[in-house]
Image (cartoon, rainbow over all chains, first blue to last red):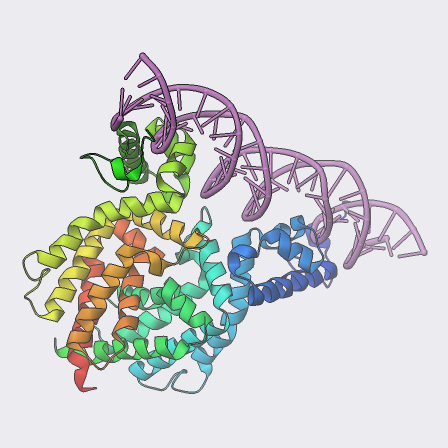
Length: 209
Length: 209
DNA sequence: ATAGTAAATGGACCATCGGTCAACTTGAGA
DNA sequence: TCTCAAGTTGACCGATGGTCCATTTACTAT
């Protein structure tokens, strides 16, 4: 018989088989090692090889798991963003649904700033990786896409007359600005949050232009 | 006699002697070659060696002249920024002195967007170079410093109650955001300028928060 | 159990990059 | 013309992201 005919699969039938146990273990080891290194060192000092060594695996394994340095950073960012994502979708106001757009937007941006403050090196590394990557565009980054959609949606609700998508890009772009990023790394996320609040308040009040 | 005693210098007395003619020629060749390459290729494809070859000089010469890749990019940016700088300092309103802060700010940001549109790859290259550089901070970039001072000064005039410096960083940060940068590269600087105008108008009208 | 197989592994290897350096050439002042 | 500081050069360096493939390992059907 031809074993592995697709039709003869048993109860474990799934189109893609589950990741092997050792692979899953290594994936975690790599993620945790990268996390730890980024907590203590600036991104340019965290090479893929160093991550691999710290995780106790070969460099090839990292690339096999994550495709590229960018892929690894993306995965780390995704982990951090998932919680926020959920709070936005179904958490209590003002972050979650129910509050006024202005309040939701200010709350969201404050949370993003806070997230940046707690993961400064990671955000910088992710940024740099995306920037360096060859065929990669920021628009392909699902986290960015979802943040942008949320922000531009809220702006459009409050100010249907402005270019909400553009302004959303502008507000989010702020996070990657070096002087601001270093503030965040130093823990001063309130200052950025206040800046967000001022801009958003002005934007929402300025309707009668 | 001991030639070159500092005290015995003749009419050509200057503390640093003029750049030699061949050196000046090469400096121009390198700048023009880099300019040309950046007009046609994304920054990561414009290596120092490629610039050197295109300019008809050795790689070492580029480093000798500009110190580093970052130095080269900075010089190119400085060339582009000088004109704007002067228009701001002594040109006619609304860009130059005389107009209301809001109008000046909107005009300035529109010009910056336009400059970005005409030199997209250069700005990206400069950005990337500064980001990659080791001991380098964006705060050390004199162009950025001067732009930031201008923008935050105007904001402070119109809204003495907000964190003008922070908001100035935020507005300028916009330029380096990838989705926006690619718009600029495509020539759509009006869209960014409109976004700037909306944010600034809101900010200046929102005083009675 | 066990055998067969796809998945996973690791580390030597590669191309490229920014940057350095020491030997060599050249322009310009005296 | 003569001298030497200034300029030039390209081989070389260390580091990095990424590739490759021979080898090992964890599943699964029997």
